[in-house]
Length: 214
Image 1 (cartoon, rainbow, N blue to C red):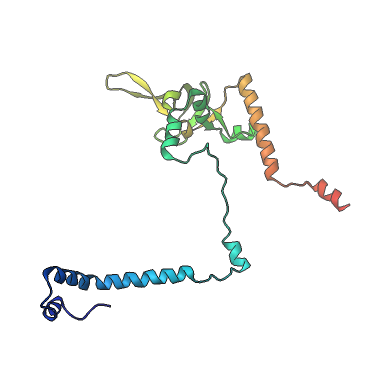
Image 2 (spheres, rainbow, N blue to C red):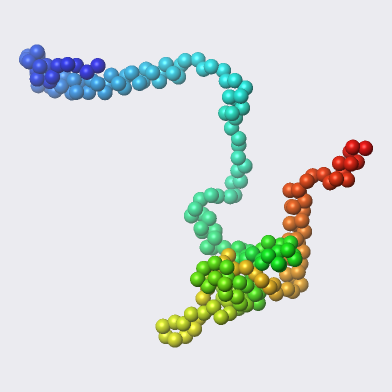
């Protein structure tokens, strides 16, 4: 390991060495602790790598089993790719993304959780500065991802009045404007939700169990 001699003592022991050799000796003396430590760790890693490994027990093997996740090459988790897809989405996709949840009464009535918001729906703001305000949707501004609600306005510096944009996720729909297409969409969503609830529930009914017992 590290030598007990100082550089000055080394110089006195070897007075006949040249300047180049003295410099080399001094550098080796300073770096010798690091060289010895590096050699020790390298030999330890080599012994660890070449030493035979003990076989794993069944429990340990089960614990170290790797699980392969599903991977879809068309789906990215990149932040910038998702932001680009969001802000460059066409109007047809923005319609779906600008959905709002239904109120508790409507959810129980139609068995539907949310719907794409549209003009003439009646909504209530549940979060934000205008929490508690109710009104009819006068415009769905898809370019800015907001909706305009009647009586939720502000006054500009020049005295004119403009609507305040509200994010659809900050409101609940209290009354739907129903037409043929909207009713068809409600029916489709309700059927899909019913099938999903049935699959998540019990796989067998009481009648099926009694038949198996017989």
